[in-house]
Length: 175
Image 1: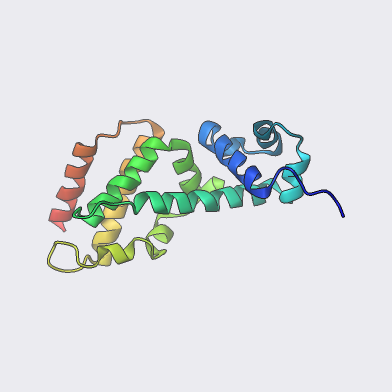
Image 2: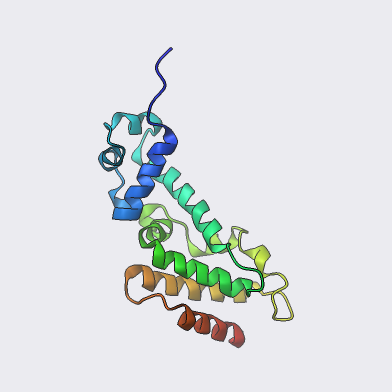
């Protein structure tokens, strides 16, 4: 029986996430991940046939982390505002992971697919607007939040929760 690998698949994915978080997803390669693990490239290629396979596994893990992050809202908050603010805060705190998630060249997700994934939709029922939020309002809010998140992730402006919350509230009032 061959010896069990000392470097597990989870360890490889975690190392790839560290590289992505620190240096950006473009820097994920067998050498950078091996350096992070302080090993040769052999364990990386043992668990993943290609670097694209490793990037896909890392992207999947980041997507779950992102979903859990944005859905962590306190009771009594307007869910649409809270989710939007968490979405933008994620971009401010995790710039490289946000870019990995939404960079088309990196295999990231598109905004319409994220909206349609069903993770956010259940939160919009029963909002304090008197009626459920329409798909149009949800889309408009998501585009506004994604715009804020994108300029913050690029470093074009700072995360100012009060200013962004007012912007989101104003947009919702106009719909």
